[in-house]
Image (cartoon, rainbow, N blue to C red):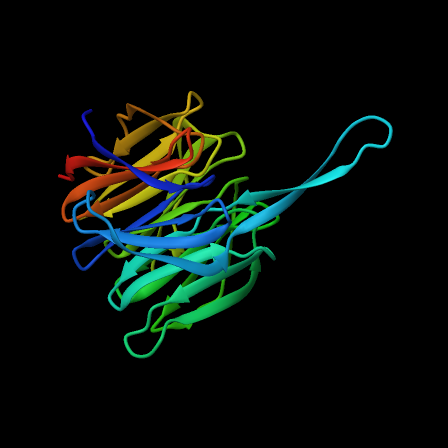
Length: 286
C-alpha cells in the first residue's frame, strides 16, 4: 500500500494523537520534555498553530543497579495524549504525572474546561466524540477497561468493564455506537460495541500487539491499526461490518500508531525509531 509520508521535526518518546475538526487535521504529542504539544494542518503537509502547553504527561519508574552500593534511578516514561474533535471544538485528554486522568473540554461559550478526574491510570487515555457527547476510555490501575461519557458537558458515571489490558484502550464513535478496541493480556486484539448503555459481546481477533491499538470511523465503517510484534504498522478496514483482511505496512514503530479520517482520507501517524513524528496519507477512505 502506497503512503504519502511527511516526517516532522518534532520528536517524542510516545505515540502521537490525531483528530479532524473544521477542515484541519490536529496532531498532539508529548515532547521529550514531557510537555504536551498541539498543532494543525489542512492537508498533512503544511503545519501551523503549534502550541506548547504547560501540562505534562508521564509516569515514573524506579530501577536499581545491582551489586554492592547499588543506587536507584528514576525513569520518566512519556505517555501519549488523546484528541477528539466535537461540535464545540478540539478536546484533549492525558494522564497527569500524578496518575490522574485529565480532560480539557472545549465549550461552545467561554474558555475550555480543564477537569482533573478522580480516576487514575498508568497508561494514556483515549478520547472520542459521539454527536454532542464526549467519551473517555482508560485502563485502570487494576487493568480493567473503563468508559466515561459526558452529555451536554455533564459527566456520567464511570463504567468498569470485565475486560482487562496492560495497555491503553482505543475508542471511537461509529454511527450511534461507541467502539472500544484493546490488546488483551494475551496480546490479542479485541473489540466491542457500546450502544445506548448496552455493551455488546467482545470479539477476539487473530492480530497481536504489545502496545495500544488505534481506531477511527468513516461513515459506518471502521479502521483499526496496530503495531505488530515485528514493529510493522498493520491496517484493518471493516467491510460490511466484518473486521478482517489486515494489511501489513512497510512503516515501523515501537509505539502505538494513530489513525484519523480527515476529509474522506485516512491519515496515519507514528513515532519513528529516531523519535521523529511521521504523518502519512493513505488515499480515499472509501
